[in-house]
Length: 368
Image (cartoon, rainbow, N blue to C red; front, top):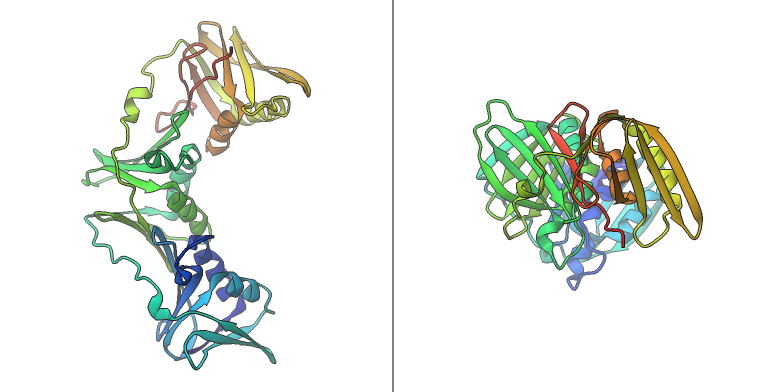
């Protein structure tokens, strides 16, 4: 294999696919990045068997072929190369490469490309497309609520459904829940219980930041594929039945705060969280009439702030995990939010002001 490309293109591609490579693996080949050169350019792939990220960059290919190079060292050296063209030539034994740049060169040992596992060839049973920006927006509004407890794998995923012409994304760690609905005009697909690992959704969000156009989503029996421009991301689906999230969303409320200034509320909670330095950063929100008092106290000190609100319903005092409220507010794409409360122990629901296509549900903290 012999090719010429640029440092910037190579560094960007290596940095992208490297994110799919496991930090520890019993299979040495999985610690490498597969480089495949053809007449179409250079394709790079990283995988941990659950997630595979592939991208393409332009290259002048003199001799096609494959190389499997250690991701860590390849990324470290490429990132430090000077700007300009880079030549990559396979070592005579095919298990390493020479990188030439300027008047210098670096030799990098590698693995046999034959040992690299094939990325699944997914046969789609359903397919749809979204603009890149739309895809990033819907992901941003739910991904923060996914769980991290590997003992309950179903909650470490994001639920994807298409029902009656609308796409639904849902994530929950059982203490909070985020839901986003996006209309898909003229789409007759019906999909239920497609659970995608949150890691794959996170990497998709990051990768799409540098792309434009559309994202094509292909759902297979055991895998999902996201394709956009040079990017192809393949993820195994999580087995199991996702719980019925609709049962936990309240259909009414006891207290409602309308058109809250989301940025002002976020800043207040951030300041209160400084004084809520326990294992769970608890803040207290008290609503009465046209004011909401936010307070926190610990051995560090205490804080109390009052915000003007437009409220209806009963006065209430509710304790929350400050981190959960902050993440929900940061994920919101609207300047104003409505907050529905259901007493000191009932779930609170945050929505875009006057909208119903997105919600964040947070369970209160029980004060002893």
